[in-house]
Image (cartoon, rainbow, N blue to C red):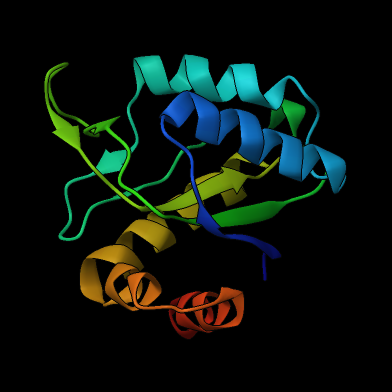
Length: 147
């Protein structure tokens, strides 16, 4: 079972701000090093992580080089943020408010968690239930119901 961390009703305006603040949050708690932010930005440029589900969601991640301790940072932002669509063209965007930032050190486990998360997102109401949360505890429960 992978530990989860939560950021509720953040007010990030861009994916870069989300990566910066998410990395700071994780770094302060001993999960990642400060290089994690740069690795997220680089990977996002090459391989976008926005899923065109309804409602949309993004799963930012990078390899485990800068991960000290495994976690999934679950973020519910107060507004939508533009993310390039996974597998789409450069001009294809999705606008999620819910994000699952993966910080996993082992490559095999990383792939398994990513596949599991995508499957759960496509088959259930994880994002819809998360968007209805009124506080961190309700957000946590919405996520735990599916993951």
